View 1 (spheres, rainbow, N blue to C red):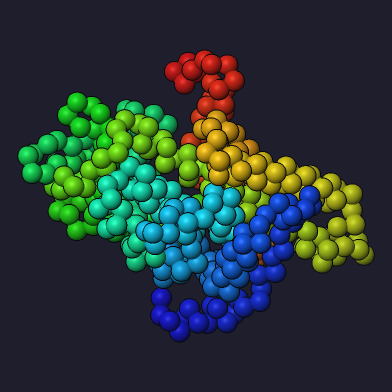
View 2 (cartoon, one colour):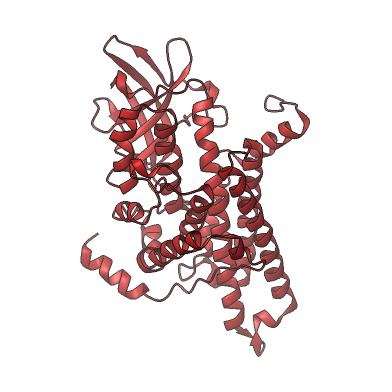
Length: 406
């Protein structure tokens, strides 16, 4: 898109984002002054530079690539990782707050940041060598490079242990073959953290760089969801991967699953942001829309909808705030993270659907964000652990019985 066209979008959209976050239980009192300042900084950027253009890009089903460096500038990439690698050095609660502010505008943009921070940068930091950290993390943190995470395959989604992508030792390099599917950021990624099996069937992480011969990233088209986010495949045809690109600090599925826990945590905060935006939109509309001689907010059924939305949002706010405390202390369990991801995406979907009804026909138009949130959340409820898989993770924690094969 030409700069002049972007300027026109910014000019047309300036001041239209009137979002005010609901905080019925005074949860802001539980946040530090620094956390509130960081949140305001990200919120200001979203209102000024993202809200005016997001509907345009969603309608085009195009990713606004120019915002990658801007996301880096506001600290959205790996904010929970150490500052010595160019990252934010912040706590997990602050990371969650940032994801909430991004998804308040659009789930696809939050996905871009989640993948970069939790699924690319985190495994390089957690399981990589010091040389790998110094090479990749600063450029990923700044947005100079964009990354993606290769786990899901065409025939293996909820069962990653069945992956068929594999690599073999060729003496001075590894030879990688296979394919990954439904990969956020893939079409434009400079770096991919790919999980594959060696000759013994053991899962390892490999850093694959764009430009390596045999590596391609075809884009996925015709999406009705996450339309402002880039999705694609990762295809490996005899890709020569240098041996120094193997992540040395982990083997087995513990590697990718640990990364997914960090990303799922961010989703729990993010999906809540989408719910808050839908609620705020519906509340404002209910005060302004007149029917039968009075605002529709004066009618009992509309008050019921708003009351139930606010109740569920408040419960979800408390849930992720407490989970953030547990993450900061290193005490959060995978089951606790699954509960928050599953619950908060579900309430976000319900809030979006109720808000859409309150807006009537206007709720399906691009004049309001609700239908876009609804479509986005249909992906969020599925990726990084489906709604049902998270139910079974929690069920196994409760009963001690593994029902995944039942």
